[in-house]
Image 1 (cartoon, helix red, strand yellow):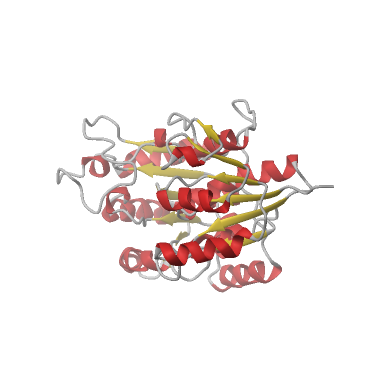
Image 2 (cartoon, one colour):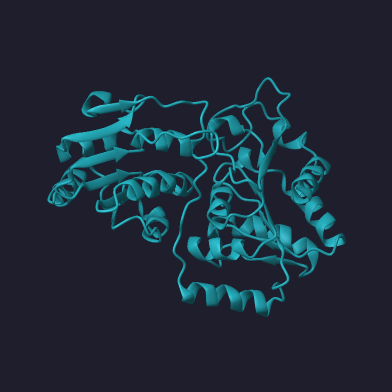
Length: 341
């Protein structure tokens, strides 16, 4: 029997990696005897390695080890020996197109907005109006309806990870539940104002809720500044846990409030109630929380919004009205609405 050897390429960042998992899971389910490998960047190796649907994770280090085209070429020669029969490329860059071309696989799938589109044997329309999970399912040719596309990412979590989180919750007396808040983002115009997060936290503390701040090491400074205002009443877990550990932590949370950033997608792995705050971006880009327990909020009555799909390091028109006009009371009202459902 000929086994399909399939390569998925997703060399974007963490949120995109998580949203690739539903398509990979569905493809594995439909082709249980296939071998599915993933080509990714170092930052997302952990999430793909924890997927039970993936056989092997191959890492390309675009910033260092494989930065030059020559080193990329040598790298491609090394993985060409895997003799892939199909490639699905969720990533649309020029480098990815060159990888596709040099691997010389007979059946390749990419989006119709990819660089060097002619290198793909099959082009699939990239529907801007759809959720990213739907777009990825389109790429593998899976037909879905209004509900069946909402496939949650599956992550294998070890007993060691569960024990580590159990210990953290016990030591900090959080076993009874808590509200997780993720105030960080790579882009400053995606960050809800810190002073507004502080108002939200004060409200939750007044309601006798426990609050845990989460985020990467890069978010630690922002989280530390916020936590310092509350005299140890807020638990700062930013930078303390890996991605998989953070997902296990979120599984124990009552609720997550997050900017339009990776924690929203991590919460889909945990399948918890989530409220995503949109400042400069909009949910229509297709990266909103999609489980039945979640929603999003955005101040849309602005001619300048959205100002870009990723956001900026500072507001292009120096007002940041998309964040400032979305008042904490609006967040609290939406939170209570979700909680009551």
